[in-house]
Amino acid sequence: MNVLPIPASGLPEGAVMPEHKLSIVVPMYNEADNVEPLLVRIHQAMENYSQPWEVVLVDDGSTDATPAEIRRLAAQYGPHVHGVELVRNFKQTAAMQAGLDAARGDVIATLDGDLQNDPFDIPRMVYRLLTEDLDLVAGWRKNRQEGFWMRRLPSRIANRLIARVTGVQLKDYGCSLKVFRGSVIRSVRLYGEMHRFIPAWLATVTTPRRIAQEVVTHHARIHGQSKYGISRTFRVVLDLVFMFFFMRYRTRPGHFFGGIGIVLGVLGSLILAYLFAVKVFLGQDIGTRPMLITGFFLVIAGLQAITSGVLAEMLSRVYLEANGALAYVARPQPAHGEDDGWHWPINPGPSKLGPSKPATGKAKPRRK
Image (cartoon, rainbow, N blue to C red; front, side, top):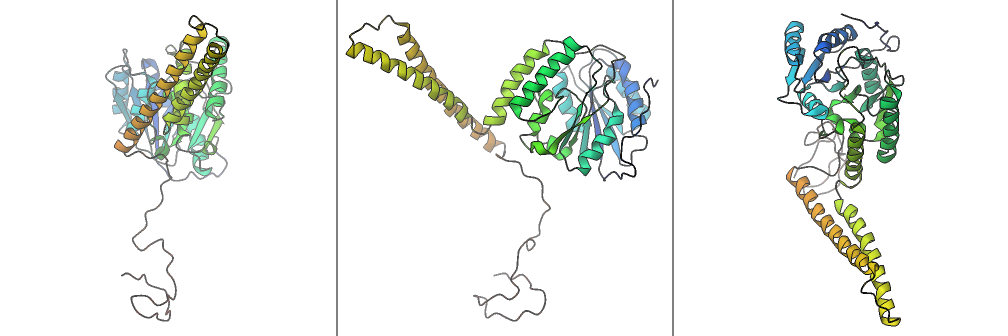
């Protein structure tokens, strides 16, 4: 069954893996021939793993024998392998979100189900995530085993464009092999085609300094056919526009639409002011000039943009308040007791409770 070589672990000599629980999430669509080889490869990679782990296989409404294979192999391997079956094909982002929802680990790894990502890279990426206190370690397919013109060149252009727009400097946004800190990835909900922009979405709840990339192995596809084509380029462009808006103006959409409205309104007003001066002071006819229509159009468009900004601002506030969402995300801190976390004076001065007493050891909290 195994057709790929067994590499070394890649961990530093004598490395001790910090305590955690690992969930490996794999979305699959029409990958019946890859389910068993993938599980064999995962178990080989995790054979000497020192921490508890599980595998979550998500069937994204496959039309072949993929769901039957997942059920069969889950029963064969045991409860640490379990499947999630979607009722129809919801696409990769929704399937990945379903897997994240089902994952129970405090560290979550994702990879494709086509055997092009190598599970042997996961322990090394997890070790780096935990020892370097990161929130995401993204795979970098430095030596991609795919065609240049149809796959690598468009991907290279898209990666540079995404990095420039989002400010998250990664060389490979499209690699599905990623390792996340569970508490961080669970604070982001994935929709549409957002799986390509997960590092950028994470940058809305964490700092890019806690996002790193790791060179990973990339294999040529052995079974099945690729689900991606050149048409995804257009979807990436549309998603990138939405990504830019969400990252910059999620909590202040009025600034986005209002800025556009002010620019359009000012241009329209300048045009109308010029035509007014031409009419009044030079006596020229302006009724048939295209500039008159353009000026009125720009002023009206500016007013509509400003109005849209006001409505968007109201909707965003309703959404945030109704869902209890905050305009910030803070890292979890240990809970304090009622009297913990205060600096109590050693020898408090006179108060309403009576005269001060000399300190006789550790000061006790005083209550009214």
